[in-house]
Structures are given as C-alpha cells and as structure tokens.
Length: 435
Image 1: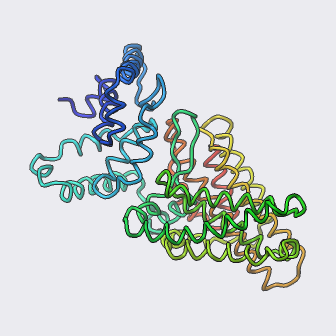
Image 2 (image 1 turned 30 degrees about the vertical axis):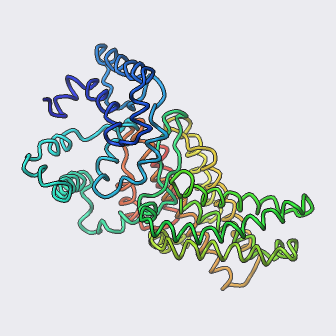
Image 3 (image 1 turned 180 degrees about the horizontal axis):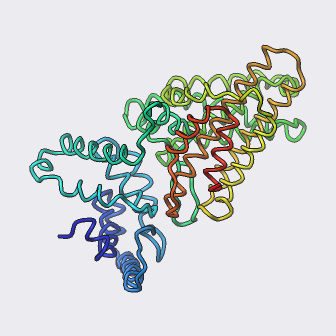
C-alpha cells in the first residue's frame, strides 16, 4: 500500500481513478450507485484512467488536473445535491474530494500524515479521529500563512469569510459558480430549522408573487416595474433553491433584498408605483426580517466590513472604477487566466456596483450631511463586500488552474497597508491581475 507521497510519484493515475470510483462510497446514494454500475459509466471511467496513464507515461504530471478530464462528471448532479449535507464528521472528506474534482494540488505531506494516523486512533471513531485531523490541518495551515506578530489573525479570517458566497468549479461548463457558504447552509441542515425557514419563506414568496403579477399586469406603463420584477423573481428563485435543489445562497438573497429595498425607498419609484408602493415596501421588509430571523450569522460575518471606510484623500469615482475593473476581471477570468464567473453571478456584482453609483450621484446632488454620511457608509459597505467576494473568487479559481496565491496573505497585506477602501480595491486588482 503506497503512501500519498509515493503514489503522487509512481501511481497517481491509479490513485485518481480510485477517487473517481470512490465517489459511490463517499456519497452512497442509490442514484450514484445505480450510475456507477452501468456499462456506460464503466466505459467512461476507463477512458479517464487511460487518459491519466497516457499523460503519466508521457512524463506529464496530472496532479493539477480535475478528476474528470476525458468527459463529463458522471456524478456531478448527485454530488452537488449531497455535498451540502456533508458537514460535521464529513467536512474534511467533503472538502478533500471537492478539491480533487477541482484539480486542486493537495499538500501531499499533510495527507500522508493523516493517512498514517495510528490504527488505534482510527478505531476510536469520528469524534476522536476528526479532532486529530483538525489538529494536523491547522498546524499545516499556520505553517503556511505565518501571520504577523503585530496583527492578530482573527480579523484576517473574518475578512475572508465576509463574502457574498463561496465558489465552486463547474467541470462541464468550465466556469466558476456561486455556491452557498458552508456556515449559511449548515443552519438549514437541521430539519426543524429548515421547516421553520420554509414556513416563513412561504409567506414572503406569496407577497413577492402577488406583487410581481401586479407589476406584470401594469405592462410597460411603469418604467421601474421591469427592474423590480427582475429582483423579485430572482429572490423567489433563490428561496425555491432551498426546497428544490438543496442550496440557498443567503448572501445573494440579501443583495436582491437590498435592490428591492432601494426601489421601495426611492421617491420616484413610490410615485410611479402608486398603490403598489406599499406592497413593495412590505416585500422589502418581509425579506429583510426573514434573513435577520433565520440567518443572523450571515449578517454577523459582514460586520468586519462595516469598519472599512474610504480614505479621506481618495477619489470615490476612481475607487468605483477600480471595483468595476475587478468585476470585469472576474467576469472574464482575467481574460482567460482563470475560469470565468457564471454570467448570472456576475450580474449580481454588477448590479451592486450600479446601486453604489446611484448612491454616489445622490451624494453629489444633495447638501444634507447626515443623509450623505449614511449613503457613504452604505457605499463603502457594498464595495467592501464586492472586494471580499472577488478575493475569495481569485483564491478558488487560482487553485483550479494551479496559480499560486492566497487570499489570506492578500488580506494580511491590506491590513498592513491601512485597511482603507482605496487600498482594498488596489490590492484586489493586484491579486487578480498578478501585478
């Protein structure tokens, strides 16, 4: 039996083929077992193994390639449905296998140490062995990052979780897709909590559907109706995900809610909507209350971003342009250097920046300092969320293509530079573009 280090040098194709076949054990659902047993599946699995062997025989190291390179991931749908529930005892193995799917080059030395944990420890069950594994992983992570002695690592870790959503590589379409944050989804794995959420969400959905139908009936006579309906329907789709596909991107839902709320607070929209202005306000309030009630942890993880402010000598419009450049880079995968972000997810980031621009124009158009101060805080907060999200995208997408980079290191550099909004934008651009 070869250790992971030996396997990486002499028999990695065999290791990889066993990982592919092993998904039926990692996610033992009837659908995957049925798929794995068919002749067509065995043929495709053999094609994967053959391709690995050809690369290996030709001296090409296949370590940075995803498991599925000769064809599609035969178990992708089943895996995506099952992985959200693989928390607790399964968390390390879930992340390890997802990394193998994404082509992330593992730390073989760390995996070897985990593989060689004494049998008597393994025999004590998940509660014991997972604690040992967590200690090994933490030791290797600390050795890699080595945070500054003058700056605690807690704010850095908080910054890199203050993202709208996490990212996963779609092997079939070769793009990055927004996925639920683990902490958000873990909240919904409890059957009673999920039941309570779906019950409250049902009330929100009913209001959204009625308002959307009312706006549609008004036709093209209302200029703002189309935009509001877009966000209403997008929010409805995100809520449906919790029921239909087992995934809820709470950060994304929160941003749709912000768009709906902005429309509800706009004097121009309220005048145009007339009798529908009150239902619009109620929809915004109900969605905000739904998230606050069931996902206080989501709001809490953004707390660190509320302290990020624009530098006094910064030019806000230039900073906004930096963040538009960032979203453009994410949309194109920095012109093909990384997997691009799916168009629907890019649209969310672009809409956030459009709302930021609207607030900045409002700031320029009024002398009410208390009003402007509130708008400036929200501008900074929204930009910071886009920046943190782009940083995590770069971290995940870079690992897929084997490009070095660590968002935690980038965040540490940002803290040392002064923690301002302009500095955050410049650093994220540097991190994305490799400047």
